[in-house]
Image 1 (cartoon, rainbow, N blue to C red):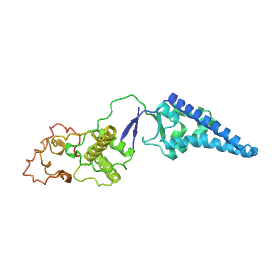
Image 2 (cartoon, helix red, strand yellow):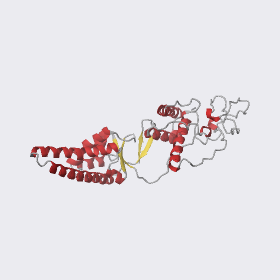
Image 3 (spheres, rainbow, N blue to C red):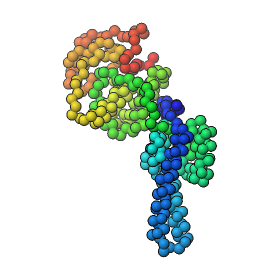
Length: 322
């Protein structure tokens, strides 16, 4: 197991691929590329039989560079690190921070691979992989990449705390189509590890992620919702949309009962039926406009007693920094 750290200072647990599986994937890729090279070269030679020997030699070199060098680079770029051999062996090339590779990463890996795999019959690549702590060859070192296992045994994953109940459905109208997978990954990793962070550090990380998420959705982050709760609510909305897309949009969803306000927001007191929840003084909250309720004054709902240090931690896991 290898623990990597993303740009958002979130640790990712990845399993670097072992040398035997990587070698098998390379052999499969080379076999496919060699077959394609032989077929295309034979066809080109037959089609250009009338050319002189120098022209045919130039075409053979061009086919070699195009298929045995450019082919793997194009495949890794378009598949985000999954070549045919790696796909068969359950492997994938990722960046050092765990994100998907781009063209420049595949280009560096492919060019250096010509030297350490094709020209030296893989001897240099094997030695570099054995010396490296994470099994990286020279192409991975210079490109800043890592080959990891995608098909791993099912293990216990980090618990993502649910958002406060009074945020359910509030972000149903957000456009999440422009949010990249890397940002979703960073948000999920932050939510699973936020209890392990210093409160001030965790709060600043949540603010940065919330700002990035709001910029991608085109709607400003609400000022009445703490950033960590905002991230959890939007992530839950994305998961709900994926579930509806997977199991059908016609499934009836029962309306949840009036939730109790979490202790992190002054709670433990259930919100009255028919009126929105009003948090205690010092924690602003604006009820959603779509709720259809008129604002109420603090004298309508009795103010709950602020939580004491002896109280149990909130079920959602969200709390303001000290």
